[in-house]
Image 1 (cartoon, one colour):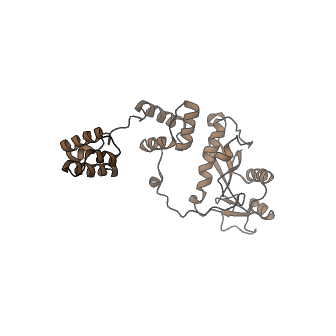
Image 2: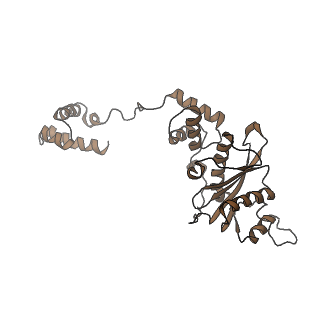
Image 3: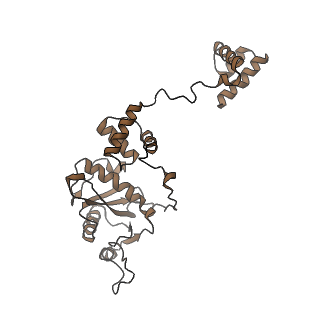
Length: 279
């Protein structure tokens, strides 16, 4: 029983014993005398169980129809299987006319096996503290994917994300995650936003020397030497969880641009209005 139902039970017991008049009980419960008499009748007939709401444990009258739920999940499975619930809900609303919250879709996708919540992922790691200033640390990463489905070859999306705000700073589709591709993308970022204190990346061969037996050299890659000349540090994540933010932002951002027809492989991308604030 809820707190309100327990309070109602205590008052009605006093009324039933004759210790409290019905008028006073109505004032205590915030009900009319007629409602108190009705509750008292149910209490005398069924006891405490008569005061429990009959709606408890029953399906809501506002629940979504099973056919609508099945149709929405079918569209997600066919078109947005690799989308998260939030982005999938946005696409269902914009492209298919479904209007329900991302949390509702999240529960449906979990029940249907299309999404796993944080407990099911079982990824335990110590979170890294974000930097305090915009532009101080910029996360960079590349994500290879069939961004344009069968309209173009498979390509890679390079993404630059501000660490302090998760703001999407620069996107660029390239043929592959190569040193020259990162040179071009980094130059475009620097021309637009200036120098950060450091770039934060994975341990891709573009950013660090991954051959412990390498002979000669200064231990830096071509990209690393260029950043050193510009007095920009490069920080490589020690584990894949360290790059969660880049991957989480890269996929919905690139898919949104590709679906909207704004992207083209190998070209610098101008972000659509609202992308900075929304992501």
